[in-house]
Structure formats: structure tokens, C-alpha cells
Image (cartoon, rainbow, N blue to C red; front, side, top):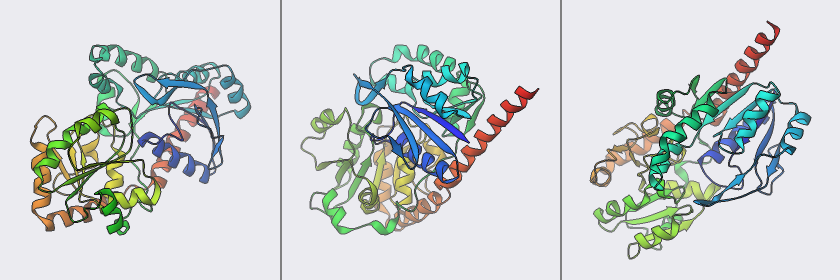
Length: 377
């Protein structure tokens, strides 16, 4: 099968969407499919055998790490040469609109997927009044697709409630070979804690952006005697966070990848995740695969991953003391913490990227098959 994948973000950017797309492209190519990635220009022309067609763009004012790539006629010519059996649009917003257009004009089956809960983000950027309009735009785009995939049951419900049709679940995935408990090391622990490996070590991994609510970790750290915090990642909110955490034992680590990232997860005592806007929370699965106990907000797609008291702790995001109480409970009982580590790893082992991609491939085949049958009829 030949798949044209339109996405608003791809390599070299680092985030949960790119992680999912990297593994998806890799496994689709391994399974014998051919993939064309159409994305904002990032300097790459190929990934794991898949061709990348980069579209020039400019940085998004509110989020300079993201490039706004506007559709252009060369996309149509590239598609005509590639002759896709199916178009998959990831988060149709700007570049993705070209995917919607060419699917319609070239009569190509269309799947869309929803990965970023943009309506919720608006509240964190002072634009909450636009939420209704954004849902209408999302509905107009997504309802052109024969199938709309979500990464959690909570997002399926949210889309359905806002009038988006033909919604189904694209199961979670995690690299259980990369993220493993045995990668824990005293050296990495010392690096993350800035030379204090004996102290309780809290960890956050992900974008440093307003909607992640990272500032809410500060009272959690202050409630654990001697605790230190490592923030792994980067983003537009870093400067504000550096000011917010000034005077506290917080280390802004920057990006880590590969085995270093795996070692960071495995070496920490607790992964703190206060975000209320997650469609899935892929980074939580990575922490769990590495055996790092998680403390996360009971919101969005997170309860699909974390079972409170079994493989992590959930807290009410509207309770100012919720994250503090959950983290204190984690450190108060070493035996319970060890049980959480074990159960977290066992849960992660259920969700390899291979099975997630085979599920996606089955969706592709069903949509292409149904279009073929309707054409014959």
C-alpha cells in the first residue's frame, strides 16, 4: 500500500507526535508499505526508507519551535508522481488542509487523526473565547475523512460530543526495547540531581510550554524534604519557568534522546506530570516502560494508561494539594513504590509499536477496500 502522510510536525522536532510518527513510518516500511511524508521542512529528505517532502514555512509566533508550512502546488505534483492509495492527515490545521483538498480532488481515501487537544490549549494562551470557533473548524476538517482516529477513549468522547463523526481508537505504543528499568545508573542520577544522587529525585520530560502546567510541580518538590527536580526538554516557556523555579534545586537539562533519555527515566524516583491537556501522554508510557513511578493528573487520555494505585498515582487536577499528597504517599512507602515500578513496566510491555502499527494498517486496508467496493458499485 502507498500512504501519503501529511503532518504539521516531524523530524528534527522532538515531541510525542513525532515519536509516534517515527515508529509508525518505520514499521509501515518494514511491513512492506511505502510512505511519503509531507511535512514542514526540517532538512531531511528520507527516514527509514520513506521519502520526506519538506514544505518551507515560518515559525509560529506563540510557539517558535513549530513551523507554519503553507500548502503549495508542488505538493499536488508530488502526490501525482507517488500515486498514493490513501492519504492520512495528522492534526489537519494548515499543511494538512492540502491533504484534505487533494484527497477530495484526486478521489483518494482519507483518514485523519487527532493528537493535540488544541481547544484546551487556547485557555493557556489567553484565547479561550475562540474555543467554539476552533471546534467548528476541526469538525469541518475531520468530517471530510472516512475515519478519524484518536489516541485515547477520552479524546474519542470529546470529538464525538463536538460533532465529529466516524471516530475510532488508534492504540497506544511505546518502545519497550529502548526504555527499560536496567538503564538506571548512579551517574545519570548524579547528573540530573546536579551532584546530589542521594536526594529524592523528581523528573519531568516533555515540552516546556504553558499548557503543560509545569509550574505546578514547584509546591510538590517543596513538600518532599531534600527533593530535587530535573526538567528534560525545551520549549517556549523555558525562560518563564527558569524565573518561576529560581532559587530551587531545579535542573533544566535540555533535550535527551535514546539511551540517555531511557537512563533518565529509569534513574528517577518519580515522574511528575500535571498536564490536563493530554490526548494520550506518550511520555508517561515511556516512564512506565523504564520502571519510573508516575504521578499524573486524572485528565484527558491519562487514565487510559495509569491505573491509580496499581501502576502509578492519579490526582484530581482541580485539587491544589492532590499532586503533593500523591507524591508524599509514593515516597512514604518504598515497598509500594517498588510494586508500582513492576506493574508500570508490565503495563508498558502490552503496548509495542508493532501491534499499534498493524492495527493502523488494518484501518488503512478497510478504508481502501470500502472505497474500491463503492467505486465498483
